[in-house]
Image (cartoon, rainbow, N blue to C red):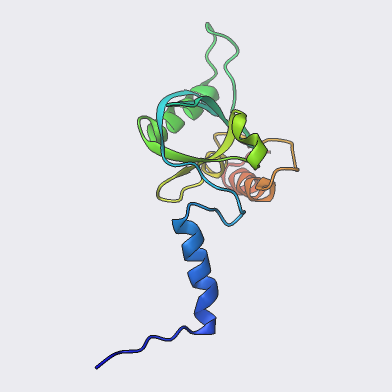
Length: 154
């Protein structure tokens, strides 16, 4: 006895989204890189990735230390928390556009799907950058607003 499988029209959008995810394409139409190894966390919004070098987390700005002799506790916390999340882990980068892949700024994702840039904002460890021309600027701004409401930031 043969079982015949028929596709439901309602299932097609789900199947299409799943196929895009398997192919490494985000819903924004941008390709994520194959997994790359985070070799070092430089500060709260910069990492060093094997074979690529320094990558800045796009759309966010973490606190900076005033200098080597002065340590900003907020900068130290942002650095430590990002390091705890990413040190020696495999991540995927998503660039703003096809032409931006030669640049050093990207969105960062764990294999679990966690959007690291937005996570830094939600945790109150960084602020959204001023640029509203980024594809994910609304998502980042929403994460920043959520953090401000939850952490009492102005």
